[in-house]
Image (cartoon, rainbow, N blue to C red; front, side):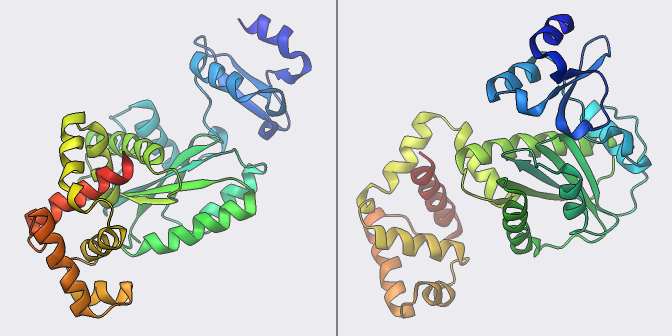
Amino acid sequence: MNAKLADLYGNDYVLTSEQPDLFHWYRTTDGEEFGIRKTRLTGREKDLLNALFPSIRILDDRMNEVQVKWASLLFEDNSSVELNLHSPVRYIHFYLKEAPSDLTDFIEAMTGLFSDETVLLFENERKGVLVQANDIDEQIVHELEQTAAALTADFFTGMSLFVGQTISHSDSSHLKRVYKAEKKWFATGRELMPSQMVFTHVDIVPAVLFNEASEETIDYLIKLMEPIQHDSELLKSIRIYLESNLNITLAAKQLYVHRNSLQYRVDKFIEKTGIDVKSFQGAVMVYLSLLAMELR
């Protein structure tokens, strides 16, 4: 196989290089590493090579001891790794639509945005994870949206991020299970909401549940909104009311209407659909119905 690849790509097929960032790197089942110049590969060729050979993780030879341990646990299923965690951690998954032209500069930009305790790992040149500890901030989402926008502009590559749950349980098997689940959810979220730059587990899990629901369940949820499906103003008002934690005053401010006007719309919604959106159970049902309408 490798001899055929060497014949096909000629001088763009290498076993070593003094400029490794110019190549996509792969490893055969026998452990032999080889690279193919990035400019020679089409998207379909990269997909085929990724299916045949495991991609070599970025900067394996420059990782410190902590990075090596986390990479061994998350990427190699080595649950015997001892991480000696003394505080909760959280995964921030990232995905790039295109590999950055200057990977070293990109890594410096990423690491400069977080504390020294944050561990940066690349699974391949387009995706990876930040393991965040000690400085976990629940208000980080807005900052990450600005970060993603800035990195997208600086490196000419679309970027999306997923802020996972805070993990207090330091058992290696549990840390691995959470990583795998969140990685799967992140992929689903990108597929369902491709324009969104930053996801959280709070908004992505309902989308994942929707994606895994049966057609009968989805149709049922959508039909609940049938009486008001063409009233875009009412639908928008109810969505913002839900996102404002059922706070009429706060939602009215966001909609630039008097609270009495919004209260009238909420009452109108209840009358037309028969669902008491002011109750917790009703609010959950309506939120899932609106989600089904948006993602169908």
